[in-house]
Image (cartoon, rainbow, N blue to C red; front, top):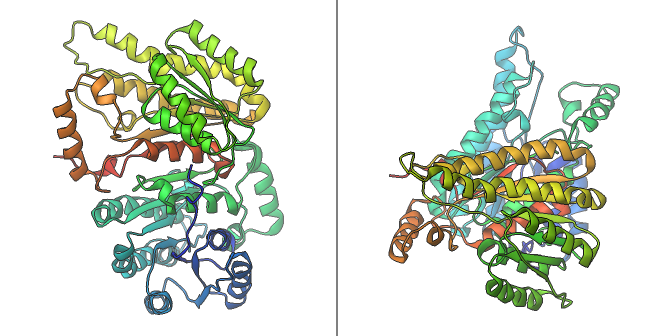
Length: 519
C-alpha cells in the first residue's frame, strides 16, 4: 500500500459538527494527514478548543478555519461555504457529520416539531450543503462523506424519526453518487453503531443511564466493545482518500458487527494469488511489511508473483510459495500446515480464490458446474476458515472473503456463480458473529467489474472482453471499471487496525454500479 495514501497535503476538508465527538476527532486526523481543515459547530467555546487540537496536530502548523454556524439555518450554510472558498479558494472533501436526535413516540403531542428539528439537521442541511459545495467539488474531483447511523439500516423503537432521517440520508447518498459520479465526485456514507460521544446526553439520557447503556452494549457487539470516535474517523479518512477511488454510493457499516497500515511481523495467507486481485494484494501487503504466503494452481505464475512480492518488501522478506488447489482438502491442509511450520503464526486469511462459469437452467451439465463453482467459492472458504481459526484466535487476526457484487445483484445465465457469492456473503456475516467474541473479525469485499483474467476464464474471447469493459466504463457512475489495486486497497484497510470496529460487512467496491440502471 502506498505510503502517501493518507497524504491530504494541499486538500481542503470541511467537517460539520466538528466541535466535539466524531467530527472533532476526524478534524484532528485530517490535520495529521496534512489537510487544511474547516471546523464548524454551534458552540464557539468548544470549537475554539478543537481548533487548538487541530493546530497542534498539523505537521506544518496549519491553522484551521473556525466558523460558528448552525447547519439547519440556510444563511449559516451559505456563510460557511463562502468563508471556506474565500479563505482557501477550493474544497476537496465535505464531511456532513452534524446530526441531531431525540427519542420519539407516535403518541407524542409534539412529534411533528421533533420531526422538523431532526429532519432539518440530518437531511435538509445535508442536501443544502451538498448543493452549495458541488460546484467547488467538481473542480477538485472531490468527494462527500455523510455520517449516517446503524439506525438507518435497523429500526429502533421510540426512535422512529431519527431512524427515518438516517434511512433518507443513506438513500440520498446512493442517489447523489449516481448523479455526481460522471462529474468525478464520489459520495459515500459511514453508518456507525454505538460510539462513545455526547449523543446520548443530547437525546436526554443521564450519566448513570449512559454508563449503564455502554456497559451493557459492549458485550453484545461481536468485537466485544462499543465504538470510539477514532474508529469512525478512520473510516472517514479511508473513504476520502485515493485508496477508495473505486468506492462510491455505499453505506459503510462501522458498528463492531492503517490506510498506511503497518503489517510488520504479521503473516498473511492469500489464496488465488497467482494473478489478478490476489497477486496485487500480495504485493501491497509485502510493501506494508508483512510476511506473505502466496498460493495458486499455476506454479509458473506463482513464481513470477513471488519475485514481485520479494522486490516490494522493504526488508527483503521472501514469500512462502505453495502450489495448491483450494478445492482439494489435502491441498488446503498442506497450505495451512506449511504456513504454520514456516512462520509459526497466522494473522490474516484472504480467501480470494474463485471460479465462475456461465450456467443456464437448461444446461445438461448444470450440476457439474454447480459442484465446481461451489467447491471453490464456498466449500473451500469454509474449509480454510476451519483450518485457520485456531491460529487466528491466537493472534486476534481476521478473515477477508473476496465475494462479488453478483452476490447482491442477480445476473442471467450466471445463477450458480451468483448463489455461490450470496452464500459467501452470508457465511461472512454468520462467522463474524461466531468469531467476534474470540477477537477475530470477518468481512467480505464485493468487487464490481475489475480488469482481471476472470472474463477469459468464464469463456469470453478477447474482442468480447474489450467490448464489455468499454461498455461498462460508460455505464459505471464513476466512469471506469475497477483495477486490482482498488480491491487490494479495500482488503488492506479491512485487515488493518484502522477497521478494528468493522466486522460482518459486505464491502461493496463497485464504482457505484449496483445502484445504476444498465440498458
